[in-house]
Amino acid sequence: MFGFIVAAGSLAGLIYLAKHRRHGYGARGYGMRWLFRRLDASPGQERVIRNSLDETYAIGASLRGQSRRAKQELADVLGGPEFSEASLQSWFEARITDFRAELPKFAAEVAKVHEVLDDRQRRMLGDFLLRSPFYRHHRGHC
Image (tube, rainbow, N blue to C red; front, side, top):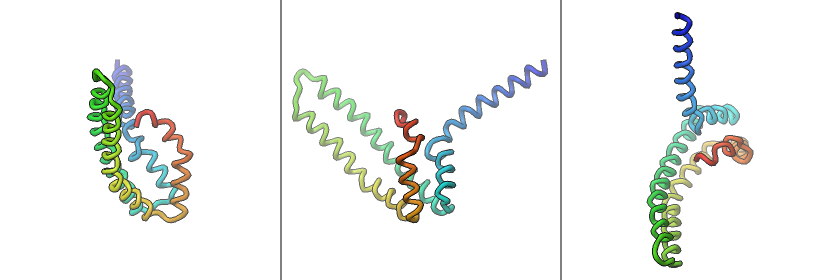
């Protein structure tokens, strides 16, 4: 009986760890610690990069909210009684305007990261982005 209780407790602990560990594998989790070690980043550099990533995620969340609204607008354009190329054009222009509004914020965050890294670290970061299995593995979920 005691063995069953120990086994059940161990299983519950494993399930808890599996659920909570999965959430740490994003850009703020294991992948970033690995990247910071590879780049030999200082704690100050890590802080700037993490803050920039947080801001970038906020920009992405804003665009996701806008894309949900855009999906409904596109459904209205395509599901209407008649197709109008002008309405589709205005839908695209609205999306381009949304992205252009966020571009300066995104560029400022990328500039912060670029500024804090030295030339070797920038090259390594670029190589990481090109060859990253993390991106290929998660691209359908982002």
